[in-house]
Image (cartoon, rainbow, N blue to C red; front, side, top):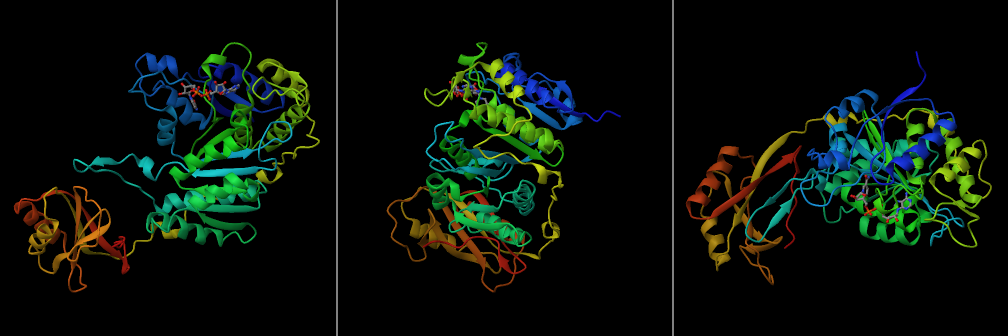
Length: 482
Ligand code: NAD
């Protein structure tokens, strides 16, 4: 049996084919054992009318090899084209996006000479579930979905990444002072999992101040784990302030498949001129080699590349008079790296993947399948109402009840307006009527239905409802501000 690992590659668009060739030349030159299958993705397929940018048959190769090294593609101008990255993430279940953000002072200009952090971003949940609705004339909503298994998977991945990559600390960013249930769950799971890793330092920050600290003193961070939206934004910030967006690689990891790439795009204006810097895709391929169990080859490639940077052999994008020694094209850069295979950097930190031979212990805890006792205690009923007298509407609706289920309060923009109105400068046409049971006993869903029916029959426009349940006695819904 061959000891080669099957992988699927796509050469992509623009500078893609050139940087892919350079990357393959370097990693194969360093001894990577790969059985390479090639698929076509990108602009030509979009233009042929495939709105996903990939041939349906290409998924067969990806499902077979489970490892995808992907060059950037060009998304044609105009609407209707789906992001291939989003599709791949969903089809292959790529739950973790891992982005090392490293500065290479003094060889690449940066404001942060000692920056070396890794962002681990949750990739499937949060506002990216894409569940959006227009509720009223004035109000649109997006649902933020955070699950316990999703949080456990990504947070455990961050700690296992730290353990197998010799990283010392894992930091969590979230905003549970405001989103007490969703970000609150992420924080709670972080606290549970960190307790399993006493040898790894850990801390957490509210995302706003955390982001400010990361941008100001990135040297104080090591691995940072975040829900999807914060991770999307802050991984770009981190890559940018490292001074080297063009040098960053990225991994998208799933339980059964993974995808590796550069974070930059296809730079069409630089294509076919032997100009592009292949470093982003090369560092993506280094992450791939670690992932498929060839960490020694990964280290050889990474260190030869660091040495090439140190020796001042630079492509145009990082070339700087006085620092750089030789301006080279894509091919010559690849040759320079290949020439240095076996050498280590002298000033920059040597890449060491020796710990990566330890297998990651991933998965979720039994808590994820635990079923709490769920009891229905009320309902939030949302109305599209632009009438002149919310107080009167409130007192009308207060007369509509079903058994032990009655109106507790009415609110607008999170502030109570009935029974006693709090001062509020302006209303929207999106009203929430909170019905709760009056005897602390549960109610039935048919009572909820009956109340909604009565409100509708009274002439109010019911746009949606959210059940208010307790789980083992704990409220599964937020309180009100006002
Ligand atoms: P881009 O990252 O392709 O290029 C921005 C600029 O950065 C370019 O003008 C170029 O000068 C420079 N640059 C980027 N990578 C470089 C490299 N390896 N070597 C040297 N210089 C480099 O971003 P863009 O111009 O906004 O997007 C171009 C196309 O890429 C678009 O169609 C976009 O949709 C697509 N894109 C694809 C991916 C992906 O496939 N993962 C990611 C981002 C953008």
